[in-house]
Length: 313
Image 1 (tube, rainbow, N blue to C red):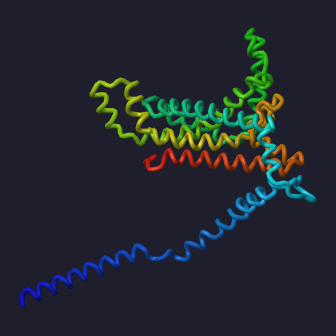
Image 2 (image 1 turned 120 degrees about the vertical axis):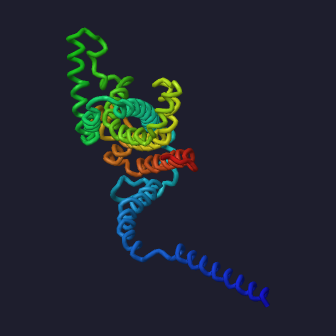
Image 3 (image 1 turned 180 degrees about the horizontal axis):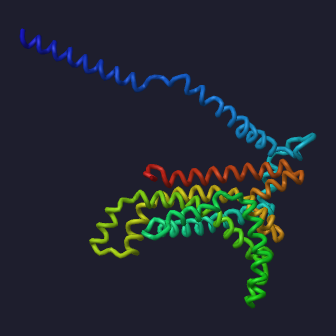
């Protein structure tokens, strides 16, 4: 009798536990409230009308001979085949990727060193942080025009006055060195945003780690290479990804500095596409834009594969 009662009580307890578990599961897997979809709908509609639909239309016209207006007809893969044999297109891709890689390296090295200095025990570091962030809030085209004047007038005048021969000619007029000027100006504007991310990363490192390293006799250089850099590696990945994607779309600074010159030496992919639109080469440049979009997606997938499964922050 006692055994039966115990079994019954155990069964009832088990049933109660299962019932309670099911109740919790239902509570966690309940359907999404309709109000969430209501807030999502305007953003989804705007994104679809402003991004998705124009993109699909552009891809459609890349298989035609359209000039942007008037009649058109399908020409299949003609535009895409022509792209891979067009030296101007290939030059624009070569410049864009070379410029992006060089600028990413310059920006991250400078921003990281500045972040280390601005998080150390120095005077006026708060004021210095404010000063270094100023370029971030200035329009790119304004920055480009200011530096254009400096490279074209101020520096050659300084070179002539001091007798420095290589300064007497503007970098912007040299087809082999104009890209250097573009990297300098782009880095000047891009460093502040990268700097802020590195400062956040450095401030997240516990101070006790450095105190323990000091007690063990680690020098400043050893602390930087063996503690700081490994602990902020996730922030480096984020800055490289954001920077590279941003520099691939470089346009306004290049327009203000060289307008793609001398010749086509500094013409980026974005400039080539827009110039084609303005010149009545709509379908051909839409094919170029489609290829560029695919390349950007592949780069994004590759970068995500490198960071997948890792705790970036």
